[in-house]
Length: 368
Length: 246
Image 1 (cartoon, one colour):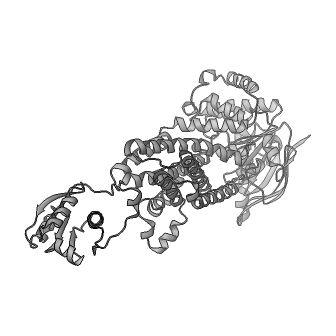
Image 2 (cartoon, rainbow over the protein chains, first blue to last red):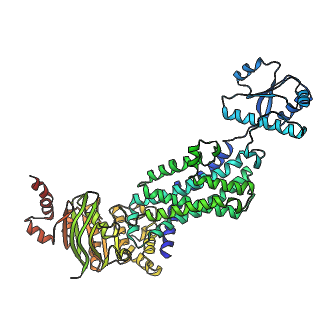
């Protein structure tokens, strides 16, 4: 125990004396969260649109007003003919043109079917997709509320996210994802670097020649970073709440327990990396390329897993962050308890145990 | 004389490369044993096996009376090790390094404090107590690293090229420390490629291509090889394979 205490004390000296380590631990998470939360937005506001209303009856006018008053769109022009559309898109002044057909209201009442055409500027496909899906959403909402007995022949792509995030705030999506990314990165990166640094400086040999057991070395390396990463998680949840208004709807204690589980898993991965990497640089590359990129791309953080090609979907199953993101989204946004996330928790637990056993085994008592 | 290291027919193989080719030698308690050889002769491999850092491929090895395969932990408690690379933490102060190594060898706090004061007095480094290692001169660092390696009063201390890259005067002072430790009853096992240092040892072994080619006191070796100094002895032994080829 006393040996371990000396070891942990030494680790804290290393951490607190190195400006770069402190920056990675606390500077990067905060800036990353702020960047992801504010810059990358999947929501729209005041998008310029044009409307070509051929019917100009009560229903079409009311619907136009509803679309324009949503805050998402801003009327740029009322078109008088279909001819101006090409021109207007080429100029790039509007992102979408909404066209109501002749006798819109009458057709709706008599036949139950009326057509609205949405033309979007798809030179920015992501934007076009967002704009059209927001518009169809508004139209749909209007129809179901105003005319509950009617049906519109509009194809609506249901966006799952909307259910728990009715205003479709992207911060709700990014805060859990960023949390997973940062914790993964900081934990795995920092442990793998701090172990390989001792290999590089030669102090690892001295440690291994001492009576310290490998388990003590591993615990001594992991424990300080575990504490700091938990502190990090607190900061992220706090900033998410304060700056982006992301709530913790479920149990805070459960959230923290799941977080500790995920951090432990990432720390073990870091040890595993350090057993492969001989230098700090290699450890850093492996952590960044093998962990960070797949975590961003394949975990469902940014791109929905359901939309991926099948092969990548398989890969996403081995991404620990995937399960953690599901878990924290469920706790933070849906407010559900362990009953709904026990499967993901169990998978994370299994991965943690697997990594621990491999790394203890691979951590060489005898350096070859 | 009491044997403190017993090596019998030790082999270490990396793939098809034989780093240690059937080594057999003993080291006696209290002596300064020089372990010489050119770079790549297999010195570091052997020293790492003796410290429990690496397992031999075959052979019997006993260090401080303990079997190196089965009693590695006990071996580690009874040895000190100073690696070729420098073994103190640069971002820790002198005092913090002493406390850390004292801690992992389980030295009680009171005793450690006493030892720290004594040690710093002896090295005349009291003023540097709270300075970071990174700012100290290399000679100081090496003396400190050695003192830390024997802080827990091991039976044997292994020094892997401890004096690389320092000037002759600092090296001489370093050897004063080694003599002191030896006088205190600590066996010293040292590798070096400075041949003048070989003269300071009680006995030396000279390795070449994984084999021990010679083992005796410096005086006896000089007589056997009919040389004026250890440098010539070493050159004669190291040249032998070339002579064989011709």
